[in-house]
Length: 230
Image 1 (cartoon, rainbow, N blue to C red):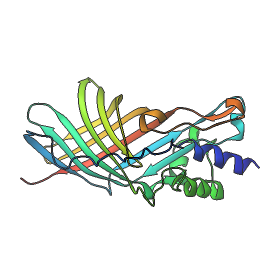
Image 2 (image 1 turned 180 degrees about the horizontal axis):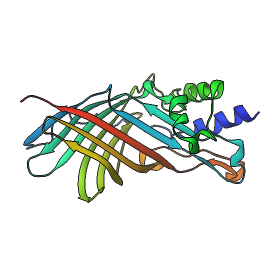
Image 3 (image 1 turned 45 degrees about the vertical axis):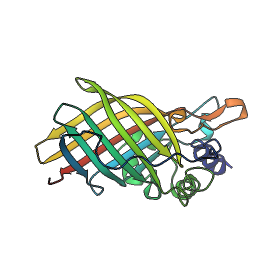
């Protein structure tokens, strides 16, 4: 009973409203108009995305928290000679892992309430299924990200996302935990929070909200890239 309820809660926590009649057009390819600067190619094998969702409410003990991990990022980073910065990213939805044991072992605060074994496998199956991310019909999430401003280790980003073919635009604040640029390659690690609604998703809630998915999605992303020869 607990396993089924936990899976239903934490899978539907990413449930989205019905798609509009007209899907959003794809994001533009290539650098921004008038761009002058360096182009860097993201290395999918060395880059990683981690997203965490927590359960809340008076009956939260009946649910699980979840950590999702994906080494599935590709795209380009554009560092302008004028100080601008932007990126175009693609996320391969089918590559998501749910509560991988090695990640949980490194994060005991998440491990205490995470799913394991069959519960984690069921969570992943439903996450990728038609009711949620629908990986068969929408295998990629695409993001166009532009730096709005940066102050010390904090930055504000404008994000234009395509999730299940729907367009979402929002601005978010992130912490810059690592930035290494040797002129040939770039390593960038960011941490921030995205709300379900900013991605066109709706947090799941049952029993009058006594058991529900918390709205914030905790996101960590590390991009490892190399300069593209001109």
